[in-house]
Image (cartoon, rainbow, N blue to C red; front, side, top):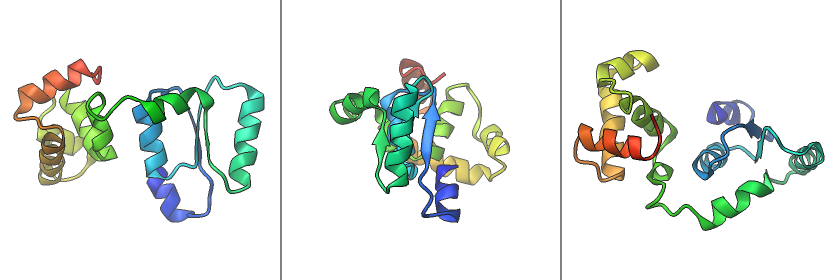
Length: 143
């Protein structure tokens, strides 16, 4: 969604307000083109400051997320950092035991395209088969 908005309105400063406060979610949003990211429970004064910062052309990340983004987790601890948004979505759905054809139906795209996403995510995460993908997903709490 962020990428689509960025394409349509490239000058728009996008501020994400989310309950997802883990570093991978913040990182994905920023890589997609968001100019800021704050938690839903942010102090109103900090939110006002974030909006002003974006309005003046800057960027803003909720101070509670900065350490996690800068100092950890390392890529070995959070391999989903390596994945595109769609690859990450496919991994999450694979974790629910869905087949490629079912995932394709979910996104209304071809099974071949989903198969390609699956191939790339497995290569990026050094996963050999579906069982290992499921095991890794469960270990990361993606289910």
